Length: 186
Image (cartoon, rainbow, N blue to C red):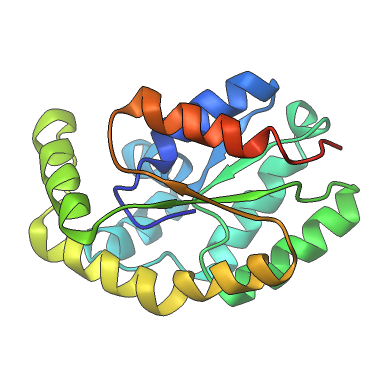
């Protein structure tokens, strides 16, 4: 978890590779559907372009289908999900059904102005049309309103791991692994 631009996608790949599980990114799945022009992609694009969250019912179904795939049976890493309290409840039901459990929820903390600069730079290098300054700032507002409350939910469950997301990618990765080394693995 973390606000847009915190490095979730970058770090998710390293962590998933380290533990030998798939990284399931809702953003990647949305973007793939947008580029393919699927009905889900057309619907999702409208929200993404405005910096809004794609509705829970679409996102939940997509995640449910993905964690039911064979490669996720031994475990998985979620990147960008859950983002709302309703999605936490939905995820609890999904993993209850599949027999999985959450070992840890990693939240990357990054200065808000640093986030804006990172995303503006990503827009230039990756050609992300949804990374305009207005959309970036709107995404930060939505994160604060809808996703930040999840931090307390997972803190109360005793599985929250907060990691400083500032600095070089390798340094952040090392901090994540150091924090996860103290978590018992299932």
